[in-house]
Amino acid sequence: MATPDANHPPSSIPHPRPIFLAGPTAAGKSEIALCLAEKLGGEIISVDSMQVYRGLDIGTAKSTPAERARVPHHLVDVVDLTAPFDAAKFVALANQAVAEIQSRGRVPIFCGGTGLYFKAHLEGLGEAPVGDPKLRAELEAAPLADLLRELEQRDPVTFSKIDRKNPRRVIRAVEVIRLTGKPFSAQRARWGEAADEPQPAMPGSRGRAPHQALFGFSRTSDDLRSRINARVDKMFAAGLVEETRRLLAQGLVENKTAMQAIGYRQVVEHLRGERSLPETIELVKSKTRQFAKRQMTWFRLQLKLEWIELTPMEALDEVAQRILNHR
Image 1: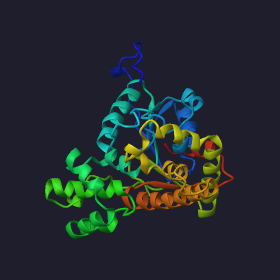
Image 2: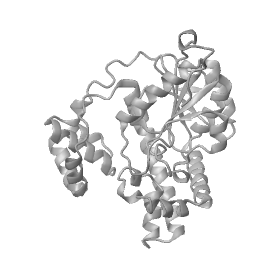
Image 3: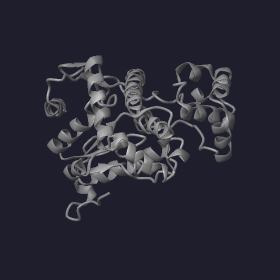
């Protein structure tokens, strides 16, 4: 990350408030963030739990070298494939990035689809303990069905809300319960207690937003489906299978978090002979659509975003200008 300009010490530079852009995969967030950053003189902070890993490029739709040349990007390629990464590390690095960006008098623009990271940065990490390697290994070896039964018995609140098809989140919830003896939901009870009152929505948007500049992007089901299908086709054409094969040699399978990334897991199964390439492509499209639906549900329930419905006919730089005008 760059250092402040020597001719402009931090004390003499104003601190523009950050802007937050969230929404489901393939909605168009990254393009809007680029346009907005260029208009405002901003820098982008990626809010993506997979783009932090070096090597996970095509399958995560990571910003290209050309895009990073246009606008500085932060929290992209910050850890090796075999390294652990979690919300606590995200918050620490994001706070550092915000301070550095603001010291240059520029605008931090958070952009991504990992809701937990948004919430952790905005509302705190709660009191959940750090992970225990021995216990984590034990839980990762246990059948998911057994962990879900334990979670249902010990923390019905979390069980009713958690994505039960996401082993990483289920394992973390059970880990916290075992380490603390308290429900996982209790560890996060303070989240949202200091939420701001909402502002009126901007023209052409839906919903209300808090005093922070938090925007969510949505599309109709047909529009988003079309964009997801096109993105997945583009990923495979760009060499997703070859990238996955290379990552396997670098320890992809050993990283339980990285293996949760949609696309890579399915390609690994293809490389093992479990299904054909056309079947794999269709499966990745289906999994991505399901993931986008879960993202939308999470964002609507967990964050007070000001929703803007995007249309196929509206240029994304026009959306960026609408946000700029609203500020």
